[in-house]
Length: 141
Ligand code: ZNH
Image 1 (spheres, protein in one colour):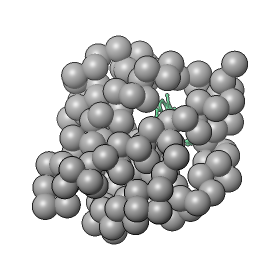
Image 2: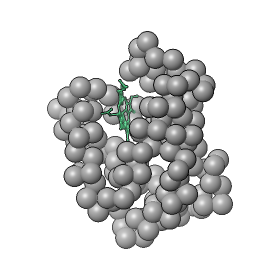
Image 3: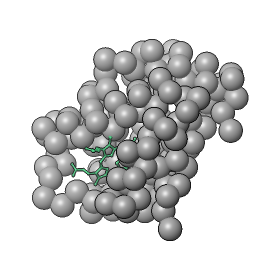
């Protein structure tokens, strides 16, 4: 579980993510599709090339969902409830793909916010993304 210190670390980093959801999200998705090609299979017919309108709009949605999760970090299940249902019932994304995307989100944060990417913040961000993933897959069966 996230400690009070983890929550403070995540909030401190996310203050610097706010306003960059689209750019950071597009970068993370681009890396995910390029490096872990199997994740592309969930997006048939979408333009997944660097800089595409889809990468930007979907990247913004994913990162903005995380911004909202950080704002409600004490009540993640409520904050994510719509997305929990959508991922469990409509999308059925294999949990392994969340691990992959989380990794690329961390890489993007490390590159864009290097001074904030201390070992302690890295660990808290990793725990946070893992907790979000656990939530999003909690209704799978
Ligand atoms: Zn997901 C969708 C978030 C992961 C796949 N997503 C989505 C959305 C959001 C999200 C916000 C939108 C919704 C609406 O519109 O309603 N995701 C998210 C997050 C995460 C995720 C936060 C983590 C962190 N996903 C994921 C993965 C995958 C996915 C990993 C695979 C690979 N999603 C998806 C899809 C979709 C989504 C397919 C749909 C899209 C379209 O159609 O547009």
